[in-house]
Each structure stands twice: as C-alpha cells, then as structure tokens.
Image 1 (cartoon, rainbow, N blue to C red):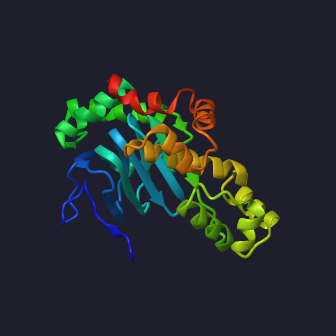
Image 2: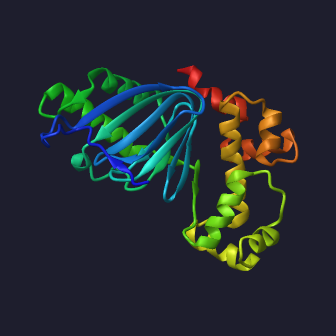
Length: 263
C-alpha cells in the first residue's frame, strides 16, 4: 500500500495558509492512523496515552508529556495504546535550519506544552502577523534546544535482520538465544550481530532490551499491571523489570507514565 500525501499548510490550489498549523484528536486504545506523509515537518504530542510511531527506519514510542518529531515527507503510521489525547503541529520546512532532520522523541517542558496548546487554539499561525510571528519564533527556539530521549527502536534494512525483527516484534518474550533465532531466520549468529551493529548502531542485546522496554510501555498504557507487562515483554520478574526501567529512565514505570498528570 502506497503512502498518501496531504498538505496541511496549503490549500488545494497550493496557496500558503500559514507557517504553523495544528490538529487535535482524541483516540481510543488500539486506534491506528494508516501510513501517510506530509510535505511539512510534524511535532506529535501526547498529553495522555502512549503512541507508537512506525517509519521505515524503526519505531518511536511516545509516552505522556513527550512528543515525536517527524521530518517532512517521512512516511509513518501511528498506533495508540490507552486513551490518547494527541496534539500535532505542522511546520513549514523553511522555518528553522536548526530543526531536527530525523525522527526523535523529546521531553515536553511545561513551557513547550503551553506553547503547543496555544498554537492549537489558533489553528493557523502566520509570521506576517507580529503576535503570531513571536509565538512561532518561540516555539522554533524551544524545539531547537530540546534534547532527544532514548525511546526509539531502529530497524535494520538487511532481509535477515528484518526477519529477526519481525519474529521478536510478534513476541518480545521469545526466550530463544540469538544463535537459534538467527538459524531460524537463515543466518549465522555472527552475521546477525554484525547487521544490528552496522545498521541500528546497537548491539543485538541492547536492541532486544529496548524492544522489551518499549513493548512494556505500550502494555502499561493500555491498562496492564506492571507484573503482567513485565512478563509479557520478556522480563524474568517484575523486580528485574523495574530495576532495568529505573536504570534506563531514572524512575519507576508507573511514575514515568504518570508524569504528565503533574501539569
């Protein structure tokens, strides 16, 4: 199925409507947005729920009070876990040279959250209007300064690596060691290790850990308890899962997903 392209900042005749536009939607658990792309950059923000953004390069998991940056013309689809309150800003690509040129997940500060919500109230921002120009400049300035956070899962391009990804994505708790997984996918253990290190910039072990972490977030957002999410994602015990989560993200799973309620 080919991706559909739809411009938000231009009308059907190609006339420019503004420099930032916004769209607001609420989704139920399990809802999906089919693959598509826009000629504009996108900032997709979730105040509740968890979103999984899928592109040809990998998967980006977006918990509450975080956002994912999607560069212009990047085909993507989005899957919702839990009730998702989504706010999306669309940016004319010429707005800022310092804007990211690849997908990434970022924390959303209280200030950036208010700027996003203010922009959503206006629907369209045009920098030819002085008050709107100042808001545009402030949003772009905040985006250029925000660091990314490690909630992405890059995918290899090699067909042998892709087969391993598909096998584990279907069942992150699959206990088989890499040697057995590789054999089942038509490659040697060392070949698969090289593919992952070269094409994802991660060791296979780190990639597998990241897959389990991100899958657990989706399960928690859909309403599963920590113990069930830990076991379904492939952890030996809830305590092992909580210890790993704290090491990677600095807090417990429940606190991490509740952080949005502080705003």
